[in-house]
Structures are given as structure tokens and as C-alpha cells.
Length: 538
Image 1 (spheres, rainbow, N blue to C red):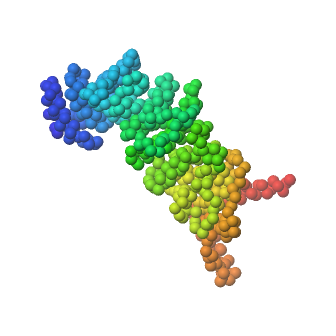
Image 2 (cartoon, rainbow, N blue to C red):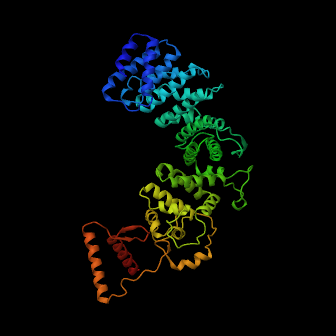
Image 3 (cartoon, helix red, strand yellow):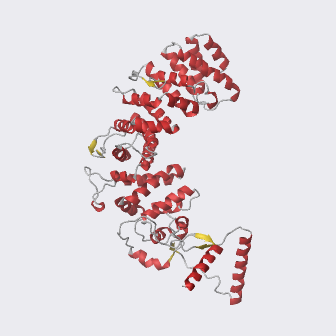
């Protein structure tokens, strides 16, 4: 549609005619997310005209139509100059019913009546603010200046709960502000007490009931899934909480608040949404948030005095740990976007295992059960161990390190135990990074309980190739039929090839230093010579 026609119509101050043309434009561009540059000037002028109309006394229907058009235009970063100003942000905040004006907070937020044109105007204004703040640094600064975050918190704390969509987009705007502005994030956390507020939002969205300190009542197995509206609000609250917990909490009751959040995450991980996709999304955000929690809070995941637990794990409840393991395996099987989808849950399980003995023991029993059949390579097969060992040689360094560190911690950071389950070839990257090629243990102290090998493994152990981690078929010796002269000739040929590759700097011969790290061979030989001379002088 020709924007010049719309601009001409808007200059005539004809509310009905303007609304009709804008509705047609909105219908044609609902799914438009990229815009042609040739009409950029007209789109800027249209933004200015829309703001002028919204400032004038027009009816709610016209306001909503103008806001829909502005929302579509705000997808284009290049035309947001007129919308990213302090005055424009204040105008949109007023239409959204937020109690912010130039930094002066009004006494109470304006109530948004449900199921009427006023609610739809408020929702469209909030959507516009989300787009504008996301795409315009100037609008982000203006939003911080007029203290939008304070208005949003007041809206969410209102005694009369706003309609669902108003709450939903208020939470989304709060998430964007906390993600894009570190100063707003600090204000939300320390001054506005948003941790407690968002915790209350989660409790309401999930209809949570407390059974004891830091323990939510167990979900009814026959209860329906979380309602779509509840899961949507919970997801936005989780995203905002993730931003607020990225840094240490200095509040007086910070530790208590974080333990409450951990308990809510435990409850949420046991719930299901309307679809598998929504359940996975909710659980993914819960995992991300738990990754921000101090490890001292993770005991809340397994300490459930009311619900009880398993005797073999000192009465601890491992239900949510099993959910996390299943979530991890599902993300491995998807084989897409490992860095964002898999590494957070691996990091969470790793730290939980490192600092909580019962969590480590339970996960070890599921992931690394006692070995019996060692005829196949550790990376071959469909078990969780096989899948994790395959990730130890992944092309993405972060994924590779996360998988290796997880298995290393399950083995109580013992090199010998790790090699038993993975083979030297798969573990070499971790051992080089840790300086443990010569064997030994990591720095963390673990309990003294011992791992016992099965009889089948003890019988097979002498025949296992330590590099591949499995029993190999006997291979013929290629030097068996050679004379001594032939062997010497092949050895000299090999030395020559290595020397040539090294001379062209295609490879660098390496040796092991006394501390277990790798270094160029000349350096390691020099070190050994120095140590030998030192010992002789003694």
C-alpha cells in the first residue's frame, strides 16, 4: 500500500478515514519483518504522524489501530528516531497505563478494565514499547530515565490483578529492560525488590502451595497441565529472574530468596505444560535460572522432608534430578544447538555433583553404572555414557569441555576412573587442559566411598586397550616378517618424515613436563637435563 496516501489522509484529521487506511496497511503487513529502504523516509514520517494522532483526543479504537501500525513499523531499526525520544516513551507508557512520568511516579497505576477497548489499547502500547526498546538504544535510555521499571513493578503489584495479556507484556518489558540495561537490572534487584515480586508472579502462575520451608506441595499426578496463560507468564518471569540473578545478590534476605526460587524451580520441573514444546521451554528456562543459583542452594532440590526420599541416598528425594537427566538426554538426542541447549544443564549437573555427594552418587549410578561389557568402544552405543563420551570429541570446544568435566566429576576427578569409562583417546583433551596427562586427581576433595569393579570387568581389564577403552581383536604384527635391517630402514624413514614435517612447522613434537602438561619436545628434554644435573650435584 502506498504510504503517501496514508500520510495525506492523516493530515486531514479524519479519524474514521485514517483508521480505515491504517487497518488495511496493518492487514497487509502483519507478517512483514523486513522493509524496503526506498520508503524509509515515508515510514519515518508515518511514525511522526502516528505519534501526533496518539497525542490528540481520539477514540480507543483509533488509538489501537495507530498502535498496531506503530508496532509493525518499530520492527525496522532505521525509522525509530521519532519513537525513541523521552516524550514518545512517556506517551506509550501513558497509553499502557504505566505510572511513570519524567521520573515522577504517580500514586497508583491506572486500572486497565478487562475485556474492553482500553485493555486492547494498553496491550498494544506494551507491545510497541517492547519492540521500540529492543531496537532502539535511545529508547532504552529514555525508558531508564522515566523509570519504566518502577511503573511495571507497581503494575504487577496492584491489588487488582490486571488482565492476562497486560501482565504478560508487562513481564516481557521488564525482562527486556533487565537484559538491556545493567543499571535498571541493579535497581530492580536492590531498590525495587523485584526478586520477591517475580517469585510471587511464579507462585500465582503455577498455583503453587507450600508444604514446608523451601518445599512446595507435590503436584497431583491427576491434575491437568499448567494452563497456557500460566505457563506464558511463568516463562517471562523466569527470563527476568535469570537476568536479575546473573550477579551476586547483596540483599539482606538474599540467601533466603534464592532458596525459595530454587524450591519453586524444583516444583516447576515436575510440572507439565499443555504441549511438549511448552514443557521443554519452561524446563529450559528453569535450568538456566538454577545455573545462576549458588551451589549451596541446590540441596533444596533433594531435601523434601514432607514428601520423603530414598533410603539408599540418605532419605534424599531424587525425583527432580531424574527429570534433569532426562532433559539432558533429550537435548543430546536433538543434536542441535548444543551450546545453548545442552551446556546449561550439563553445568548445573556438574556443579550439583561436585558439591553434593548424594546428587553425584545418584547421577553416577544412572550415567556410569559398573562396567560389564567392554567389547565396544565407549563412544559406540545408545546409553547416556556412550552419548556423553561422543561429545568429548565434539567440534565445539565449550560442548566438549562441558561433557568431559561432567564425566570427570562423576569419577570424583580421578584420572584412572575416567579412563576406565572413556578411554585415553577421548579423555586426552581434558587431561591436557588440566595438566593431568601423567595421571592423578583434580583439586576437589570427595568422599572416601570406593567404586567396586564387576567380576566381568576385572577379568577383561588385562585385555583392554587403554587408548580406545575396549577389548580389540588381535592385530597382525607388520614387523613380524621383517629382518633387522628392514626394521632399521623403516625406523630411519619414519624419523626422516617427522623431521621434515617438523622443519616445515607442520607439526611440533611434544613431550610431557614433570607437572603433567605438554610442551615442545626440546623444552622437555632441556628440563630433564637440568633436573638430572641437579640430582647429580646433590
